[in-house]
Amino acid sequence: MSHIPQQIIPDGTAPTSPPQNVANPTPPVIIMAQAPPPVKQRIAYEQSFPKKFMITLSSIQLVMGALAIITQVIGISVRYPGGHLIGTGIWCGIFFGLSGLFGIIASTKPSFSTIVTFMVMAIIASVFCIPLLIASSISTAVTAHSYYRNDGLKHAMFAIQIVISLIQAGAAIASSVMTCKAVCSCCRPMRESGV
Image (cartoon, rainbow, N blue to C red; front, side):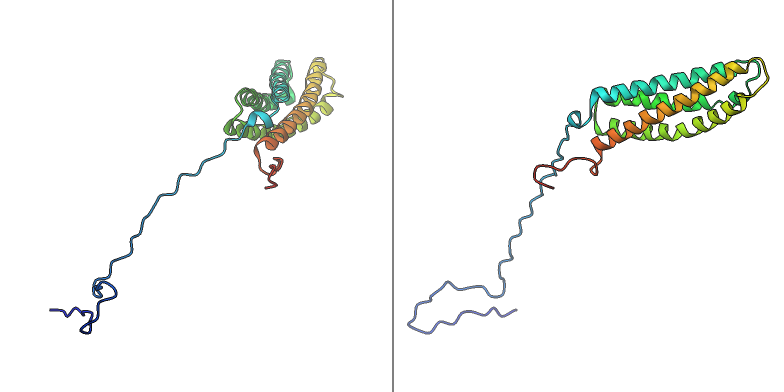
């Protein structure tokens, strides 16, 4: 058996405190409370995302996508299509149109996901302006001094595609800047607290 030490009290004195059990001290009580889940602040994208301006830019992109496809189809339909067989206007026009479509969706229902989708598509569409511009410029230069009868129409379609690519580049770059300004923390204005 184990020996439990007892408090020794001399005769005639009253104990000053109750006897303590030295062998079995009471364990400390630990209370664990779960932290409340973090509350995510809702950002009002309607205030930082200019709806009318973005609808205008998105509509321009939709029109430029349709015009790129139409001019490419007209260029392919001539007797000697030449450079139009590459189909640059069609595959670039699809990306222009998708960017415009996502822009209209993001303008009507601005949320983080729709704005980021529009920003990504606007950046991709602006990159696709480069091959359309290069292919149309080279083909315009080649058809300028051609001796075929139907080259006037081909030349006009290539020249229109140059203008389409430049207008689309401006609209897509402006769209990507405005979407970044609405979503990215690097472009957002500082809060009132300075943080």
